[in-house]
Structures are given as C-alpha cells and as structure tokens.
Length: 445
Image (cartoon, rainbow, N blue to C red; front, side, top):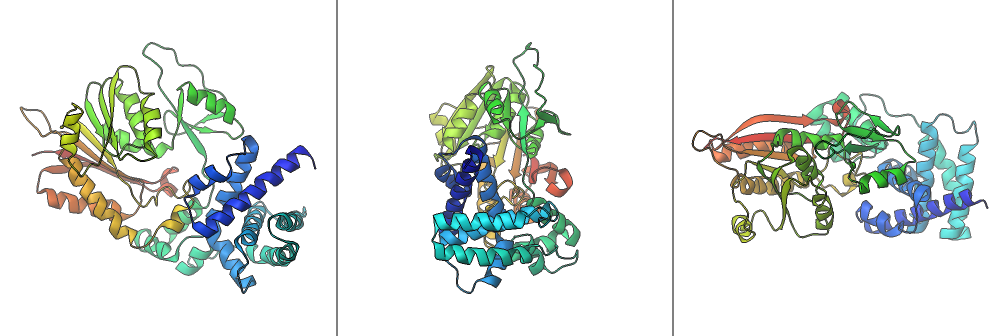
C-alpha cells in the first residue's frame, strides 16, 4: 500500500472510530475529534475531520435509509462503517453520476475492507450487502419545493420539530434555503488584523481571497502551515464575518471603557480591541476550560490598550467582584454575547442540531433575559449632558424567541430605562455568512 493510500485508510478508520463513539455517547464533536484524531496531522487530519463532519451533517438522511435496510442495528463499530460509507455515497452523487467512474463500487469495496479491520468478517458481509442497497436509496433526488416538514427534515438531516418551527417563522422558500445552506461545508475565514501605528501593511498572500466584508478573507485549503505562521505572528485571526456585527453595534471608540460580559473564547474581544487601540477593555466569563483560549486572545491585544480578565458569574455579585479587582462598575459600552441555541451557526457546528431540544427555546430565553438584566446594571447612566452608555445584546441564533421576542420582553421590564437604537438579524441564506441577532440599546434613565 502506498503512503498516500495508507494515510487515507488511517484517516478513514479513525473517522469511523470517532463516529462509533459519537453514536454511542453523543459527545460534543469538537472535543471528540480532538481526542480521537490527535495522532493525525495535515491532510490526514483534514480528511478525518471531513468524513466525521460529513456523517454528522447528513446523519438523519443516512440513518433513515439504514433503518429501511436493517431490522436490528449492528454494534456501533459496524454502524459507523455504514455511516461513513453513506456519506461518501452522498458526496459521490453530489458530484454527478458516480456509476460512470465506478466510485460506488470503490466505496462498497473500501467499506467492506475497513469493516474487516473494525468489526469482523461476518459483519463485513453485512456491510457489503447494505452499502450496495444504500447507494440506490441515497441516489434519490431532493424533495419538491413544497414538500412536507417530515420529508424536508429527513432529506436535509434536521430534527422535524425544528423544520416545523422554521417553516412557521420564515416560510417554505426561506426554510428550504436555510436547510440547503446548513448542509454545505463551511469555508474558513480569516480577519486581517491592523498593524501597529505607522507600520506599513504587508501584502496578503494569494491564497487569502478577498470577500465583500472589509478585512475578512476566505482561506483556500491546503495552506495550514502558512495560516499557523500568520496566526502566531498576530497578523490574522480565524473568525466568521458574522462576528463583525456585534462589534459594529458596540461601535468602540478610542479611550472608552468597555466590558465584554460573556467573552470566552475571546474572538469578539480581540476584534473590539483592534478597533479601540486605546482605552480599557474588561473581558469576563465563567472559570471554564474556554478561559485558556480567552487568555491567549487577550495576550494579543494592541499595546496601547489596558485589558483585564475577570473570572466570575455575571448574575452573582458582579459589582463587588469588579471592585475587588479595582475595576470600574460602570461602562461606556457592555457587550453581552449570550449562550444560545446556535441555530445561526449550524453550518460550522454540525452536531448542534442533534443536541438541541425543543424545550431549549424556553430555557435559553429565561437565562438570556436574566443575563441581560444583570448586564444592564453595569451600563453608565446619562449625566451632566452626556448620553448614557450602550448595551449590545448578541446571539448566534436566528430564532425569534432568542432575539425579537426577548428584546421586546426586556424593554417592557425596563420601564423606560433603555431604548432600542439599532437591530439586525442576519439570516445566513441572505447574508452569505453565519446567522446572528444583534441589538443595541441606549441607557436613557
């Protein structure tokens, strides 16, 4: 076996093992890949991740097809082989007619050989029979435009309750576009960071492709060593263009004192810092594993900015905690990027839709409203002819319960202390980047 074929098989086997563990335990996919694929590097790791993400992205469709073919589910290792082969078949059909170049036969043969390694010769025979029939089912064209929620949910691999909710919110055409959007692999974007004052900007390499969003570039595949070098040098930061929306509404100014109240892992903090250049930025979050990333990002802020990290809970004694650190308790602007359903970023976080529960759209808004109330108390009131501070509420959700409905409830509770200045809900199928909801409030009393 050539080195390239051996690497391909290694990536495939580890992908299948990762999927077997995901089927069994439903762990977070990013943590699972980190644990299972830590021995892979470069193209091997990229191939493994591509297969794992592809399976989870299309899980519902493949699972429905397998249920038609197998009365009793085999053990997880064998099911994983079937799922990886199923994704390879979907990929082959999306490229045209795979029968013309024998790709279906190759996928079947490869799955059988891997089943011998991961399972047993007997289960390899099952894989041989099932994958051949699976190819016929997965070759079925997509449902018609006015298909039922059940048909859309199965083909586009989303929970049917979520599809019904989106149909009610957005209508049939927009929901179809959203489902198709979520099923496409996400590109990688890099934000080019400003250099030091007076420093001439170096030209960007050709593999960074300009986008319609200033300072954001699409990263061509196959350049990870160069990407890592630019990251280490602090010239770029990997983040989706949707992240700029929260920073746009915060509108940070040099010399201001700003609080990022749910800051980890720190991508928005760094973006705000790059726009401020001077002043004071306090980043706050709970003491979890994500604090390490937040510390790394805060270490990269411009030299003229005073930055502080506070580990604590926004809803419990936050003013006393800030005083303990000898920090202000009133801010020109507070950004609250809340924990949410993540329905706007499902193209990136492919396992979110399988972890999300219908009850989350009641649970999340309760938590978000409480956090927003706590953050509101830290916004500077108007005084001596100066306007009050700004409170920016941000989600990576596109659902009304976490955006417009919640904002209406908050303003009702505030009884005139805040007014809504600006809002935007970015729908990914319209904007061309991740979804988000962002609202800027001004303290007026």
